[in-house]
Length: 321
Ligand SMILES: [Zn+2]
Image 1: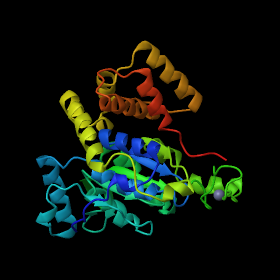
Image 2: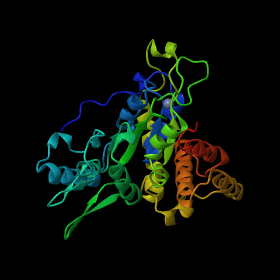
Image 3: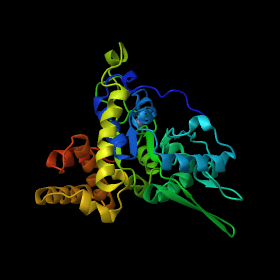
């Protein structure tokens, strides 16, 4: 089950905003949903998240090896210490995705423990599979009940998902351009509705990826290489581990006040935006943790208004017609 060498971020042309979002996701362990039209490179971007992450610690590697062994009844020593990357197809059964069977076996989400779970075309997964992601996204584990037996498996994965904004894919395309969305409001609502509010609530970042202009498709890639971004990510993670012993995404609600303090103006601003956007307390917690990661990437001790503003931009929800 060894993976080949991870593709490089520099292969993706343009998309500076999406690359920045991916760097923030890597730095704080945040889950991210990329939304954009066909051919915008959202899947290419998502596949490059693993290339930005540091290798696993000894403890993480042990837990991962145990789970791989439990699922496959074998463990390939060549993959020791490498962050697992799992990318199940949308036709995968709920049992294959979250685990189950008799006796209960871990599913893809547990095989991705300590690594990355990549779900392309998110709305095409079975509704029951998508809803089953809520528990592990919240708690980092999954409880499987079958008849009289119950099993709990670790499932602290980093979710990176991709989807089109609507069934045809062109919702939000610039007016007068080559493409135009032909979906009815009803079709769009049904399609986006497959990602339930409670699930969307638990995905830290929702990032729009713009259609790439034709001239951008030509020529070579640009921006920083994965190795360069990984260096900044490693620095930001080091700050988090020293401060609180975990990445920002895994901070428990009770730890947030201690480690992600906002000043009075920041608190007021956050409350105002949360009310305007109709965010739950959980959403607001996720925004504050994102802001903490942005501050860590900047090497800043305190979260300022700029960090908070950028974090809010990264949580826009799904595009509207
Ligand atoms: Zn459409």
